[in-house]
Length: 388
Image (cartoon, rainbow, N blue to C red; front, side, top):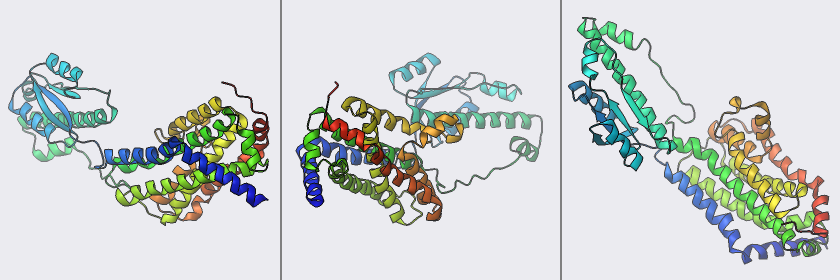
């Protein structure tokens, strides 16, 4: 009889997936499309050659050298030259350029006279990524220009070149970026953003499929198909979704590690198992939320809210060390936090699997939690009362 109930429940879950094209859209098309878009967007590593303008009010040999040096930087590309500040500001407001570099009219005169000239740069931060790149380029150029000014002033008073070099650069630095030596933004950002987006889709689809049973009044029929067993009903409904989500997750990992060359310093099975556990853990979290709030609107809203804020309090956009202690604790509520830690340990650092055992165990633990509260969800399914 148990085999019969599992078969009937599984068949019902598969039929529901086939009948609604939205499931295929949210479970297959959107995750793959979003992953491909994010990885292909910055496949070169970072935003480069941001279009900017320059206002050269000095028109001297020194200002032209500053302009050539600025245009040689990797971050910016001088596309337009403007005659004054107002013209450059209007160009930024029109979206013609994303910022401009302003050279004052007395740059060379003040530099040769031993006085400190002031250069200015203006950045449009409405576009965060390119604005950060051009800000980095402008700041680098301002430091280089400052060094050139000091070098010129010291030479005019007869200071030897050796003393000038020692004064401008007292020591040299060597930066060694471990596990990401090229500081590739694609590896840094999408290793976290893509799994988090995928987790959000899992939460939403699971919440929608559970809430639809309550909203449509078919929850009694759902339980009857599984022999009035809440566990068998959940298994029959979620297993088809688990199989499809796992296949999509593995395909996304294949794109990341094979097509786009993301670092994979461990046995591939370590990350494949982590993806499977991430899928069932997020499904279990959605079931757990419905055990607390067995309502279509509230349950879906709770999954959406916590799925979105997990981008932040899981340590993706802000370091955990910079958070308040209670915010840090919230990060461990969602499964994506543990997948993130597994990814850092296994994929990036390639340490022994033994040291990540607690993170795998935590993902497995999420699947056990709904079992203790499934009786409440069963009670609501037997007496469905839809609250709009």
